Image (spheres, one colour):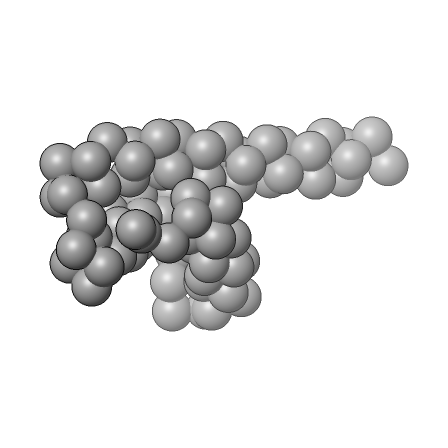
Length: 85
């Protein structure tokens, strides 16, 4: 049994939000960092809890898509608000 998808996405999104506040990390690379973190967290998750690595890879693809969608959606929402004001 592996850790739930929602928890992994929450940790990755929190990590992505933390990276946004760091001056040493370029904001353009945050989506790439999200993908790398999701893959790494899922591989570690599978190894620690005896899960299947292929299944972890499939789940990582879904989680990365969801996390990037959430990141892009919130980023675009804030940009639209700034333009309207």
